[in-house]
Image 1 (cartoon, rainbow, N blue to C red):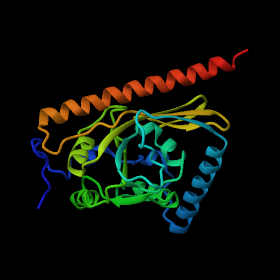
Image 2: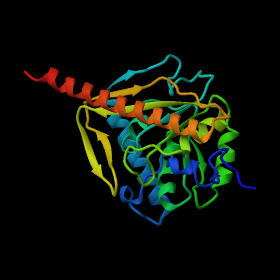
Image 3: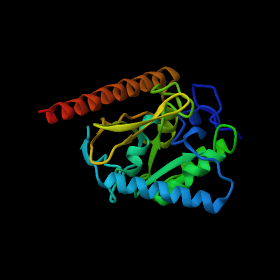
Image 4: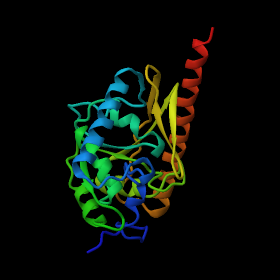
Length: 256
C-alpha cells in the first residue's frame, strides 16, 4: 500500500523524497568499484575534514533555545533544513548523537553513506525510484529525539529553492522545521552540475545560523502546507543573507 500525502494527492514515494536529503551528485565522487578502496577514500576524506574543522572558529547563532543538534541530552527532534551547497558544515561542525540522514541506494549514495557512518550519523536508505515508501515508513518510526537533516533544494535543484517533501515529513513525523544557514569568511567553491559545494578554508571563521522552529500541523491542507513551505523558504533566504553579511563584516574588521 502506498503512503498518500493528505490534500496533496501525490504518492509519498515521490513527494517527500524530492527533498533530496543529504544526497550529492556523482560529480563530487570518484567512482571506484573496489569496496576496500571506497572505504579508504571515505576514511581519508572524513579524516581530512575533521582536521580542517578543528582549525575553524565557528560562531553559532540560534534563533530559539534547546535546538542545538549536537546536544547529547536532547529530548525533542527537529528537521534541520540545510542548503545543498552547505552540507559539509553541519556534518563536521560538531559531534552527532541523534542525527539520521536519508540516502539513496545508488552508487553516489553509497559513497556518502560510508562517510556518514564514520560520523555516527544514522542512515535510512531509499529514493523516489527504489524503496521510497519503505524509507518514509522507517523515518516515521524514528524516536522522538532523533533529528533529520534535509537539503530541501536537492538532489537536482533548482539551487536554494525548497520543495514540498520537508513539510510532508514534518507534518507526519510531528517534528518542527528549523531553517539554517552557513557561511565561511574564506571558502573553496567546488562547482557541480547545478550548484556549488562550499568547503571552508583552514583557520577561517564560520557562521552557523538557525531560525525559530516552524511547526507543521498534521491536519494541514495543501494550501496551508504551501504557505508553510514559503515561510521556510523566506527564513532560509533571510538567514543566508545574514550569514553572508556577518562574513563580510568579519573580513572588513580584519582590514587595516
